[in-house]
Image (cartoon, rainbow, N blue to C red; front, side):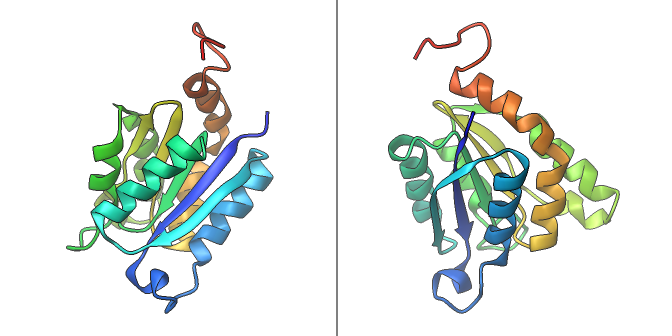
Length: 166
């Protein structure tokens, strides 16, 4: 199955064109190589909760992305609001994904505990917050990517007890 994937970068500098979005490129490469995903939408928005929420809603409701991967805005800074925006559009939480990413990161740096990223379900889409750095994206996504096809199959309704009740 070819999964529809959207990438959302939350970055003030990136949205103004002052910084190259290398983290999104890492996401794109991993999604295409590891799970055969197709990128159906990509955008950069400033670290503004309303703009992040609007983008997440459009990616899930209009583009019908099976998976939305965000990068940036998960730290402790006052403008890091991606988790809050994600929680506001969520139907259900999937804490295990983010817990595994933090645990995996802790084996490399104790600062991984400071990531506030969340993972949630909105309708039939899985949304996962990743760190802002390319290295953090690579390590975090690789720690869970082997489980994403199964998770996406369940969330999308393609596998499981309620398969094809769409």
